[in-house]
Image (tube, rainbow, N blue to C red; front, side, top):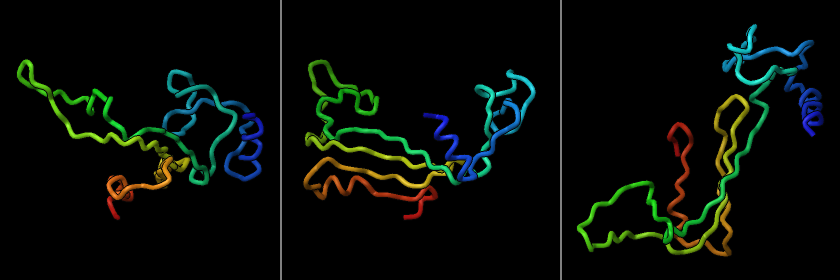
Length: 135
């Protein structure tokens, strides 16, 4: 499977095949020994990493009723008292897709809800901003 992907990357001009495998450090520079390198030797070098897009998928649910670790925050109460917290009890499953260019630059984030209707309360939770803070 990976050979097919590498073939397409070569055809598209995104990567270039090296004559011999080489060690590469975290900055993408060739190094002479494995102690200076990150990972295994590579047969390919990225010519245009900004042409690549990587997508990471994370699923979750807005229902926090049984989430005992409210962000890992500790709450102190007197013995016998219960720490009451306002939390969402509506089951709304969602998937977040983070799109990143091969050069590490963020591209966009997509949120997909598994719901036939999304309440205004849920919509207001997701205020999208660019990586630089512009709306």
